[in-house]
Amino acid sequence: MHRTAAVSPRLLILFLVLALGLAPAVAVAVGDPPPERDVDGLEDLLPRRETLREREAWFGREDLMPRRGTAADPPPAAPVRNVAEWEPATGVLIRYPLGLPYALLRDLDDVVTLHVVVSSSSQTAAQSNLTANGVDMGRVQFLVRPNDSIWTRDYGPWYVFDGAGQLAIVDHTYNRPYRPNDDLIPIYFAQQQALPVHSHDMYHTGGNYMTDGAHVGSSTRLVYDEAAAHNSMDETAVDQLMADYYGLERYTVVTDIESGGIHHIDTWAKFLDEETVLVKQVWPAHHTYAALEQRATLLASLAASTGRNYRVHRVVCQDIGGGSPASYTNSLLLNRRIYVPLFGNAAGDTAALQAYRAAAPGHDVRGFAYGGFLTDDALHCRTMGVFDRGMLRVEHVPPLDEVVGPADLRALVEAHSGEALTSVELVYRQAGGDWAVVPMSDEGAGVHAGLIPAPIADTDVEYYVQAADASGRTASSPRAAPVVRHELRLLAPATAAGDAPAPPVLVPAPWPNPFNPAVSFRFELRDPAPVRLSVVDARGRLVRRLLDGGTQPAGPAEQVWDGRDDAGRPASSGVYTFVLEAAGLHYRRGVTLVR
Image 1 (cartoon, rainbow, N blue to C red):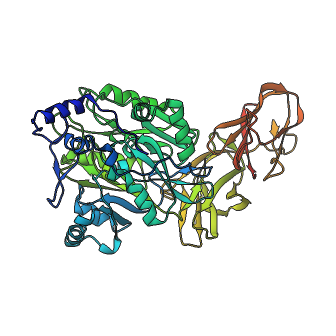
Image 2 (cartoon, rainbow, N blue to C red):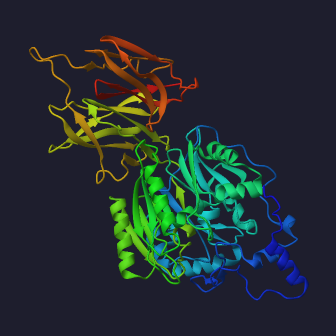
Image 3 (tube, one colour):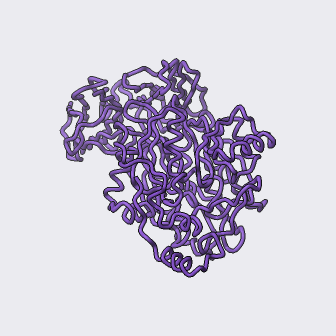
């Protein structure tokens, strides 16, 4: 539900100007660029900020604005998982009249449906001009509704899978209150697509949010500032809403790189996968240089959902005029393609495409130039992915440490189509060897297990997990496999031939597995030694500390985990790993908790 916006000093000034009969000569706010004309010359497009003309149109008439309802909806049924931009998509949401080149649309319609938001008065022109410019109209679906602007990224729907594994739309309150038609688009789109929708009151904007699809998200402090001003919410309340509606377990909120501008994170940083972030790099004399260097260092110091630190790549953004850097980070990830905005500088554009290819191997990186792209507004801002409700997903978190063979690996495979899995395979090779394929066994609750045999000598292993279901969908981890593979250092176990000493630690498999309510972890020390025993979740986060480094006597030992975390709360169903540190070595054994 919208709250009536407080009257700003600028609006009071506007009121006085209008009362004196001195109508403003410009339609845009101070500091906004000149109006951008749409590609077919039908209208002046609204910029990302609200204009004085929009505020004037609604001044004193806020109660007549279209409204989404009288109360926020309950959040989706837990556990909730927010979909990442790179996950399987069936479409992209754009708006007509267009702020995008037709060449891009002709490329997009090769792989996805174009969902076009259009008013009834513009639909005939849309049909005619899209057809005339070579767009495949068999891949176009119109959403005929009143609308205000082209910024589908900012007001468009966000997607989650709820606790039943069903795709749903979460609809934030668009932080442009004088664009009430845009704010309703996610609700109308959900109705058209027969998807459940969960609306909440908190101000937010799609350009200021990125998620890794594994319960981690990031924004600038704009979200906190606007929630405080418009929703009377403190930071704790914002974080809780993001957990309830989007399933975030960690929400990283950072100060923006400059005091002005729109403060959207997609103008300077972008997740490329769960572990990779691309950050803008500008020339040293630019006023955001120091802030960008600090943000890049900060992100590289943070742990991703996998437990490893983020890999931070940089893309050099040259001056596009007036000291404004190009916004190459404002790109669209769509399945395994990356659409990058270009700015008419041949050397800079080429270098940007190369930076993406280095940061995201295995992806098809394509560049598109357009005269409307600006330093804080480019391709990402004008597009919004539409995700596959029946997607097949493979989630696997590689071991953080070297493993004493064999390597017992787990993957969570979710077939949202409802069709049966036809294969789940572990594909691996040891250094210098041939690829081997191992069918992974179904352990229940979507968890599959596969074993890479122990090597004769310590070696490096490359591997990936691939799956297929009866709907014809395929998926893998990493997503760009086999071009990209996981890597693992696999150690040969100690041998007991002849009079050779016994290995320092024996670690049989935990039992029972899967388990509920408890599982036994046994180990045997050859000599007394300090021992640390932990349980971590599928993303490498500590769940329970069972032994904290004290010296244990030689001989067999047993620890029982009751499926609870260190605070005594029951852990959810899923894959967990015992991590044993003893005698200078690390041992990892996976278990599955089924509630």
